[in-house]
Length: 311
Image 1 (cartoon, rainbow, N blue to C red):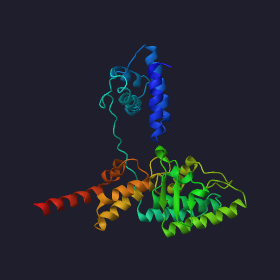
Image 2 (image 1 turned 60 degrees about the vertical axis):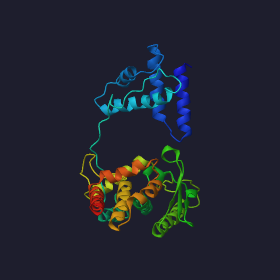
Image 3 (image 1 turned 180 degrees about the vertical axis):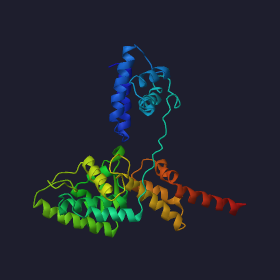
Image 4 (image 1 turned 135 degrees about the vertical axis):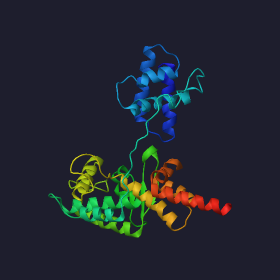
């Protein structure tokens, strides 16, 4: 292995020890090492990094910026052992901000989704409907990621204590999610129907398909799209419309909204919400505040009140 390849391997090992998976970054950095070797380059420079990042033809500026980000992160590590390394500046290939806005569901919309998910449609079985109803409900009240819910095993759902254990989630983190009594009861009802459906078969996955296998995220996503289309929440064709992941956004927004409406201090609640959602940094939780006009209005009004009180 060359010095660069050794450094890349050590960098990946260090970051993974901190909980990052870096599957994509590993492939990108391996390709970058090949690029450097072909040019007999001994150390990373901004010019070389940008040239490599822009090699694949693409009209998506964010694609090139993402490739450069992987090298920039590695260069910050590499400069400690190779001072000749130049870290590519963040504005060299800037990422274009997306104008995407998540769909924040109203209470009425969530109620319609849950009610409709229980009604058999297109040959769906009662167990299929109950399973999807339970998943949608769980996502809406806990803010769990879809993958976290579908990765749950039976042993992860403690219905006696009312606590869910999420293992090896994003960035390799694990956490506990306490449940409200109504949520615990809904999960208990699903678990009882699940056991009857399996008729003695042992399956690790908590949420299962009709054949008794773990549900695939893409399959659940398609089912949710069909459901929201039937409810008129999305167009008959095209990708525009609410996503399953928007239930997570909605839960976070609702918690912050209640903080403001009850006069509680959101600054004190944010660390707890961040932990509950499984965020690795508080900034990710602040994103919900910044992306919601209603919450920003509340925040500005509270700030204005503080200014007036101190005047």
